[in-house]
Length: 133
Image (cartoon, rainbow, N blue to C red; front, side):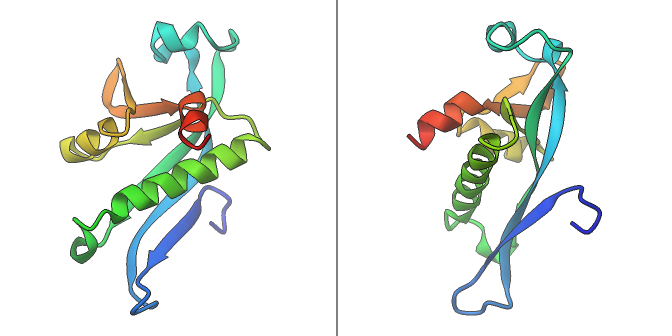
């Protein structure tokens, strides 16, 4: 955070605020327009790079897993990304899933994999806008 690379949001236990249950990070990024599926790319301006928000990390403490807190963190990240997109443009939220279980988690929320890297997924900002309408 000190270097301006990402902002970290932390979820703590109400019973023990010193105990971190999970966290996520957000930062600005850009994605090549030609890396996006044609159906999405044709809705965007023909710039070589389009702005996006990177959900760089989303992690839960092992003892906090299986309680629905990951979904809570993801929704918080998406809502903050949507709010930020009203100030600094963003076409999508992008994630780099660390493993197949993470891919499955994000696919459950309609994230779309990039064709050239199935562990890199995105959710268009217009989908997020509809989610919070």
